[in-house]
Length: 252
View 1 (tube, rainbow, N blue to C red):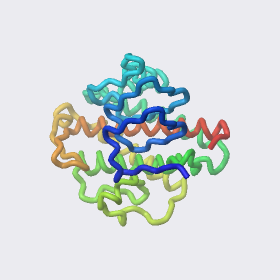
View 2: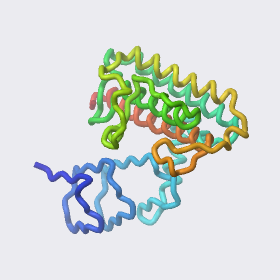
View 3: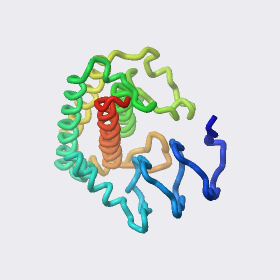
């Protein structure tokens, strides 16, 4: 049986010399500052949604690849480069690009075999669960943070694994698994909410201070909250397309 390390295991500063880590899996692990020398990384698959958010590089053979990765993702997903827009017109354009992208992906799923939306690839969220999580993300960053609503959450929403572990109230979410039609309805409603907000937003409103819904001591603005929504949308779309490709290839 393979050894399993969890959050209770402190491996900071550990040294692996000649160790065989083939097929090892790192999920939610902190690998900041890890140094690898003379390693065989053929077939290695790294997914870091926060890549490029800070000032630290990711060096491969001495080359910082962060900019290359970001540019390639912008090329693969037209409209993604607009996610950091700072003015109302730019944000409206960024959201319109996202809506077009998701519409095409929803059409793709509709044309695939029945049940595709509920297929999990390699233990990841299914397409339906991804949409449910985006419902919750919208409720968190638009409803709770920007609009400061007391009860922003739709029962269809899907929190991540850490939500309950952090002591949050799970009773606000439905106990039964919603149908895909229910998920699509909730998702469409939240997409329309963002569109309606952006239709009316002004430069002054974008600068208004807000509280981070997960870390209240961390200051936000309406603009940074919108950037978080846009970032969530593009990252989860990338995951969804990756897994749909796997379903199409028959490797789900």
